[in-house]
Length: 58
Image (cartoon, rainbow, N blue to C red; front, side, top):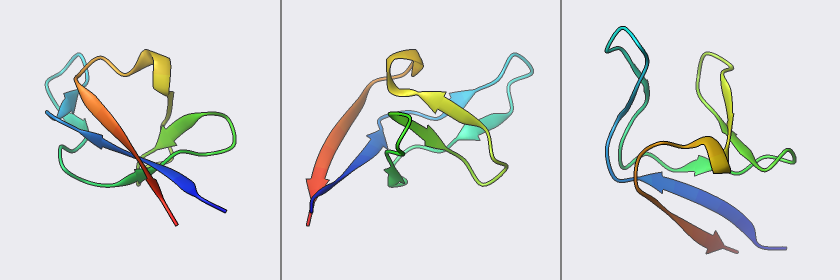
């Protein structure tokens, strides 16, 4: 089964300018169609506010 992986073009920053998702890091798309960072923050793909691309991996 192929899995979807998201690569962000730029860092996603919170309101305080802190990086919450890093650019060029593979984030696996979870069962809720979102990505989760190392702190457990989940963001749905349609709420990502930087450019990104999705890769399908085996």
